[in-house]
Length: 440
Ligand code: EPZ
Image (cartoon, rainbow, N blue to C red; front, top):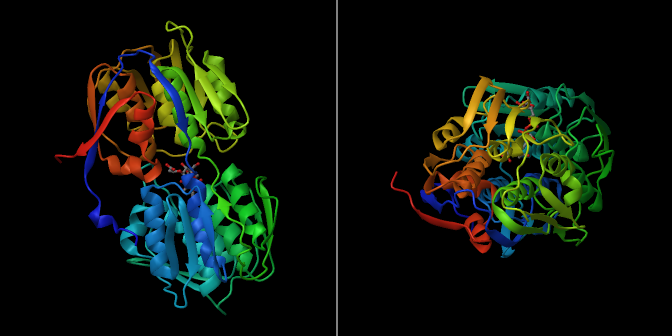
């Protein structure tokens, strides 16, 4: 039932900009979080039977993860829009599909559950967005600590366990890594004995994944803090509790920035403002009028001449400023008064997109591959652009909305990897955006 990647159409967005006017209005709804649903899907390998997940975002990365799972031995069925069931089949394949894995870094999430369940996994070096080197040393070291042997061969890695089982182990991550934390959290569930993970990433998605696994029988303590303890307790069983995917923090932050720059009043619905503290604080300090309720963020521009002040931002692991909002925030800073700096501390290739903002009229000085200075406010002009990765792609959408004239954004596939029905959501608040076939 799931479409293979080769059939994906080449499309572009055509956006008519607002030339700085703040006219958007209405409500926009947040979808389920990509970066939690992918590990939740990967965790199906830990189940005796399977489970059902709701509020699953209809995005390309979910389709790719579904394809990977089908080939490994998990049946993936779309029950309704945004609702999927995952069911373990009888036969397993220990090799990850090369074509998909090479293009999607999140495929590495499958290695933990696969190794823990099948005692063996083969996979190519995982690819993904071009945002730096993205090594896998934390995974290799961790699996070795759990008793596995690793062969680095021409076409990828082969990892084996001696007796078909991973052993519980104490693993200290030299860096806080989102997917490494999740991968070993899942591996620990089927490992023999106790696993202790130290210097873990603390993103809300990790706690959410752990809570889900615990609700189906896993024994996990400390997720959401820097030390997580897992007692290997065998295959999980479907407790018939439907999993509801938590709201996407990055989509929420991106719409909040868009609202600050171009809305009269925008209500961001079905989100979790508690996960957004740093973003809300920084935008408020810069002069943005933001109110929150339990599940909504309201951003309002009562005065169309409102000036925002420049700020200095450093990306950081949660609860610091997320690297995935660095690009949208840079667009905000092109419209803020004075000098701002953006210091990207997580990935080294993640500021390359800024040369296109300069083509649009932004004044950006590149200090080094990690740091830029932005002088604002500067009026932006519509241009032909190409989405380089998921997050910079959406940043180009925001830049095109505030710019004067028409912009074309090619490589829409990247945006579709992470955002559900983006043109539908944006049209709903007044953005002039059309999806057309790409001529490339
Ligand atoms: C996750 O990537 C997210 N992806 C990324 O979102 C996000 O940008 C990133 O975390 C940081 O928040 C998913 O959750 C699927 P890391 P991940 O391992 O886990 C280094 C998006 O657009 N590192 O936390 O791959 C690494 O190079 C994406 O949604 C090693 O050195 O990132 C980086 O500098 C893009 N060795 C740092 O750790 C390793 O073995 C943190 O990366 C692993 C990572």
